[in-house]
Amino acid sequence: MNASINRRRLLVGGAASAVATAGLLARPAAAIAAEAVAAADDSPGWIDAHVHVWTPDTRRYPVGPNFTVADMVPPSFTADQLLSHCRPENVGRIVLIQMNFYELDHRYLLAVMRQHPGVFSAVGLVDHQSPAVAAAMNHLAAQGVRGFRLHSLGDAKDWPHSETMATLWKKAAADGLAVCPLINPEDLPHIDVLCKRFPDTTVVVDHFARIGVSGRIDAERLDALCRLARFPNVHVKTSAFYALGAKASPYTDLTAMIQRVLDAFGPQRLMWGSDCPYQVQDPHTYHDSIALIRDSMDSLSATEKQWILRDTAEKVFFS
Image (cartoon, rainbow, N blue to C red; front, top):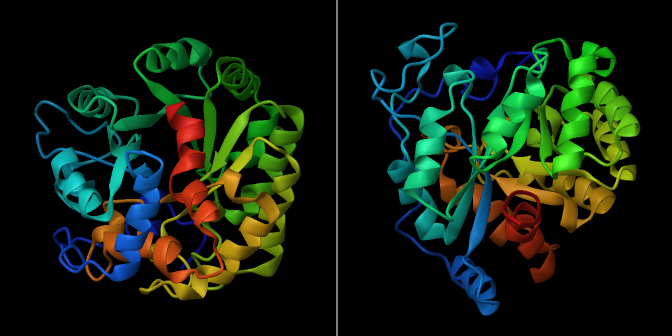
């Protein structure tokens, strides 16, 4: 699969089947043990740092003008549907990512946050080319949004030269908010430039910068991602396992990449995210995503797992 493919084709991967429920009934001993670790320090469980939600109520919450209802695949993924996957795996808090087909209309995301106080944090979307970008950030931050997503559509090369992008990065640093780039591997040098220019900005790179979407973990691109570790405020989401490498459960082909990123950034700058609902489209399951970190990677200590599965996301999005 081409790494520059757009969001709807890259991460949806054509998954149009009903939301999977496999993996929710059986609770392996490793999962129970991990739950005990999470409960030992009176925490509210793990944190999923990357999820999208939407509602089939398109009269109340219509899609944006550049999308159609056909883009909503699956047709529904509400907070209740999401929580039916999270709760059996002891995931108690979640970071919502504004879905692109709602564009800049955050009403549904904000409604979900209000309906479940304390459960959800959020990453929003703003028009980074707008002279009013600072005002848009203020409006969303006042309602609990803790970060802003940058979606590369082939224009990341222009980001370091944009005055309004500079405003976004500077304001995020001043206000303690995160900048969250959804980029392709070839965009990493442009993020490197921005991190060098704005070292105080908290940055969270989504989905390993999509390294592995092609089916192969490219060593040079992984090197480029790991070079960002020299900036102490850069974080990486270990997420979207269904879309990377072999794209098949139990995703153990990704463990070498996870370990490499862990060695570069340390556990305090990695956070796990499922990327639901795409992670729960048959044959993939929510359990298999969290289990890769929680149960399968024996090289991770209990402390490292706590950082990746909870503490890093808590620090960035809930503190």
